Image 1 (cartoon, one colour):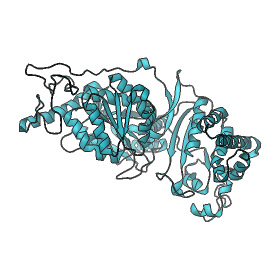
Image 2: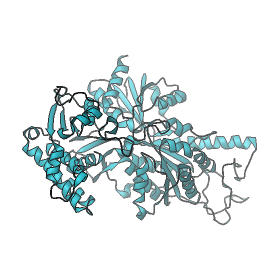
Image 3: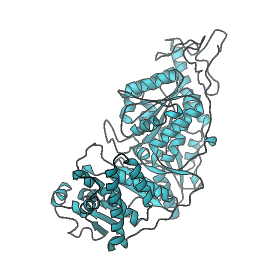
Image 4: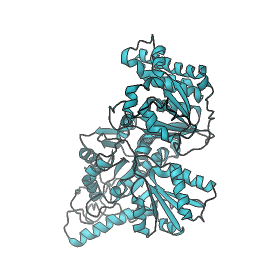
Length: 592
């Protein structure tokens, strides 16, 4: 279903729709087919205007088996369309899904427009003569369903058929089977009365002029890292260990060796971050990527990067936790770990991406801060951003930022090279590549003398260095934009968000304002340090609502930092917020 959803998405993007997607699949490689736990779903919202979320209540559900129907039926809007593969609704599959009675026969679907098709049999008939045999035949039935949807939504056939021809070019029999199944589904829509009278017209969206491409968040993070490395003038070295949902960052970067990218799949999380830090030590831009469990394993080496004051970017594509948790489900529960999850006094900058498109710019910003301030930076994404897609306006490369790196090449003090003689603005130390004549110096995890870099156990020096590292992180606040409030400046309620909650919050706020409620919204990219004017902005509003996919971590940080009596809206179900959930809470708070 992920493949079918991706193909419908690409066809809609090529048609010119605005769109947002929500892939939802089990963690198991071979999940038990036909069971509720094994259901793989792909939700897409397409529109002829600007949209923000994958939608709260789908208009159409395609149920390939009883389990898919049972797991997703409650989400479908009343009166919505349900397309059902009747061949799968036999006794064995009904029992696996927990149905005592066939829902096609007991009246439970009377409130919906049910369209049925014996997809298994029609697919078998369609692929005869293709050369595909046995169990491989029914692999094409998703293309039958995709063809029927292409008819219902007037999607261009060429986008999907061209992809099939390219993807399976080495297997002509598979190309023939999938093409035949797709066309059979399309023709079934034309010739079957119920389908023929159930169509949707979704015109192209009027988007700002420019070149667009459909992107997923892990892809744009990768591209942003490439652009950030080019902006610094440094070669990019990316090291990681495979972990859901971050692995695709490694896969994407490995495709771009033409930009001088070096990728390394390490034997474990600790080796990956060690390799990335080693690359930074010798003058590369070291990056490592992972999810929550990996951040925990990498924490000691992240502390080493902070003590050595070397640039290092840690990409954390968050997932449900703790421990192995929910590998394929989204959550924002690593915020506290990102800010505080190291031993000792170890502050470092933390920033977050708010959408697949924004992930590109957030990655560039992480590169800028890491190199300018000679510090590790944690870039927070999550499974929703990492795997969902939307149209992205491709920027002009000439408009991308540039912040070239300057290495130390000369002695900087009368008494020789001083590796901790700091820039007075950024408080960053000079970066001397090992082997530069005359600039030999020590790095490591032991405390350093605040000027020479020699190992020091002097109490006053340790305190001075601790405060210096803290002040260096605080100095980033002088170098980031101030908060700008969206919507009503005189509102009674301010909604504060971060990360992937942006789309649902934005939509929820918009819907509340359409009903006459005065609501303002800010969304935070920089989570440590906060923007300099954040406290003043928070103080302007009688009520502050903080929706998060965790148990209120940002809410607690705002209370601690600014003594703001925030109201927390928490969700930890492995799913993103719905716009309706945000809107309902806004109205509840305003009417309280």
